[in-house]
Image (cartoon, rainbow, N blue to C red; front, side, top):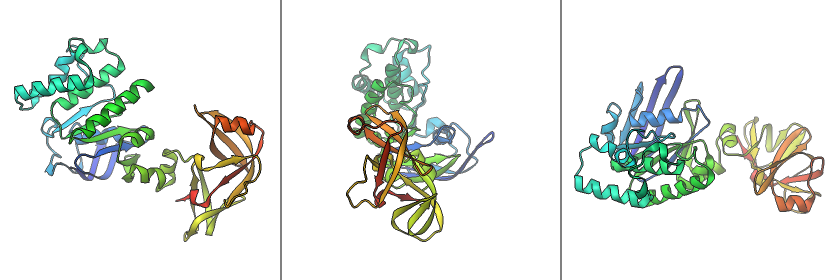
Amino acid sequence: MIKIEGLNVHLGEFRLKNIDLSLDEGDFFVLMGPTGAGKTVLLEAIAGLVPVLGGSISIGGRDVTRLPPEQRGVGIMYQDYALFPHLTVSQNIKFGLRYHKHDRESAGKRFQKFVDDLGIGLLLQRRPETLSGGELQRVALARALMVEPRVILLDEPLSALDQGFREEIRLLLKQIHRSSHITFFMVTHDFSEALTLADKASIMNNGAIVQTGSVKDIFQKPSSSFVADFVGMKNIFPADFDGDTATVGSLTIQLPRPRNKESGHIAVRPEDIVVSLKPLRSSIRNSFAGTIRGIIDQGFLYEIHINVENRVFKSLVTKGSAVDLGLDIGTDVQISFKSTAVHIF
């Protein structure tokens, strides 16, 4: 559906470098990465809003690399909504039709469907300045969908919303995706959004794609220490390898399998580290004594920072477990994790 090959874009000092991506029709694809990675630049290149230095972009088998935005069959929804302040909600939603051939009757039916589905019937004669964040989001989504795009591009559509509205718009996006044949391409820096919405994803850093795959694979099998950190592994350490063990400072850590290379990185998810007051009676191969140096409130959980021979390990513990164990700064504890929980780069 969308095929990007060897794409290069230069904008001032910023570069997109040899981007290759392929999306199937009907995919919900998420592009993730830190601020300044180049996510929005890539989205705007697909939309035809920035010039391409090299490479190609195809949509539905048609090369659109040099076509203007209105000829690409793409709808776009920006983080700041980009609604026209002097137009009513109704006029904003219908604005894109002037650049597309359309049947007035079918457009009218489509307009009414989106108004009903998005619950914005009472807003049609209001102007953007009078709308809440959630209302602005719904109107911007209706406008992007009104031109019957084969692809809809979403630039961090949830970042400006509070938690309640964010969940509401997530459900709307999932509903629209399931009931249509539209391919969704969403830019975000929030991995939780990808887990909720997407099937496939790419991680971008410094203008380059560093990993592509299913959201599950990226989450469970990051290909580098950068991706591991981005998806929240947190416990990432340089290590020397000897067969099926890794040396991290003075610690010897059992690996799930032997390694051929001599050095690299290991990572362990915080949720895979068990905190106890005494060594566990189990088959877990990695168990170390440490002392709690920090406790961070994460809502339903505490993130516990444990100093183990001058290395800080981070574990997630339920608040109930923390109270039962009497965990506090300065408490001596034992951390344990399976060899299969160790990721290697």
